[in-house]
Length: 72
Image (cartoon, rainbow, N blue to C red; front, side, top):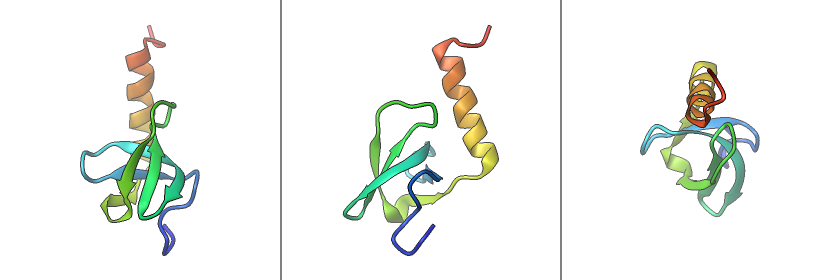
């Protein structure tokens, strides 16, 4: 993360609820996040974010793929 917050395209965890999201942009003091596989964006205050580790991103992506029924 930079002084202004995470870089666009990086992944972060919303500490308020544990969701992992890809950083899509910044609006004021909020960061816009989107689930790794796509979907609706949500806003998170910069102070409620932490960088996501590779394992967290992978788990979030697998969870979404399973929810969509892509895996047998």
